[in-house]
Length: 420
Ligand SMILES: C[S@@+](CC[C@H](N)C(=O)[O-])C[C@H]1O[C@@H](n2cnc3c(N)ncnc32)[C@H](O)[C@@H]1O
Image (cartoon, rainbow, N blue to C red):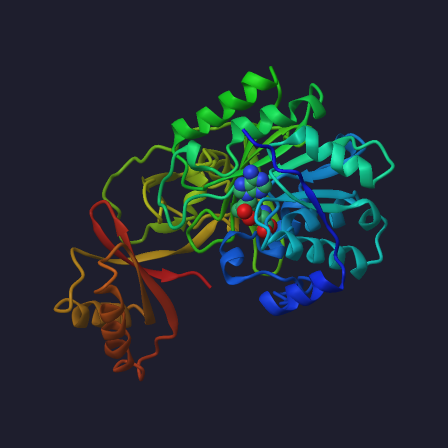
């Protein structure tokens, strides 16, 4: 196998001109102005997520040294780690078109706050699985001994694939970790980003790869959600980067707050029984179920009498005889809810023919808008929603001002009056 000689990417005028012409600097929210092409944007971690992830690390548990990202892409995540942990970064990128952008991005983040870490940071154009030659190249440019405090990697995955095999990750995790093993010591700190859609047996394969290289090292699986009923990121945190539990669920809110739930994996089990009018219904975040932390969350909610009506799909549904209290950790427990309300009526089916009757029932219960939060054919759903909106407008004279939603239950559909 030929080894590619790594090349140091200097953020000089040529690189700046190239970056500005290929991907003009762009700011998202509070991010620094970064150069990211459309293709890279699909792969890059958004700045807000990258910073939230970095803040979950305990710098005191990391050894002295640099942050390594051996497949750094735009260097957004690397720059967020360097800025948050105040450590120099070494990024390696295989694509010669992307590596100069990464160099400019990393330099910009260092300059913004005039930070010390920037001076010893480098981006190399090369193969991130050739650890020895990369370390030699870095050492030729930097005087200090290049000890690695943290390896973060987010390998590229096949485009738009619902599922993929571990062999399709670029770089492959086994090749990568074996190559870097001599530089990472007995208890390395690693963050391995993987597809949120990985199957359970693929997650086990990843744990096996890590355990075959580092025996008895601690590991935490982390699911990150920004709400909207989906898991945005899945990663394995190892050794010095691991949390104190086997699983961690992170909810990042729109305003940048971070809520975490930690614990051991416990499968949530549905106890379907007929949902009744007057009961309370919660559409929870599906990452609660995926992370095995649904039961830890349920205990935090401090409501005695709850049961899962369904635990599958994008809308796990919890039923209770009284309104969920959220205990003394309101923000945290509430952040894991998509919507919740009181069941005011039950209906058997939803179709264009039944919409006028449903709108009539809803308005009598004081509901003025009704969102269809159930699995319907995506072609039909918007049409039914528009029809529902039109029908409910006819009742606008009624004293109805509550919003509501329709949720799927195991015995049909529930019209719910949403809590304020
Ligand atoms: C998912 S992207 C990383 C995104 C990055 N975390 C960010 O914030 O932009 C993965 C990157 O790995 C690069 N890559 C794939 N194989 C590589 C290898 N053997 N060495 C170095 N980089 C590699 C790809 O070109 C791609 O840019």
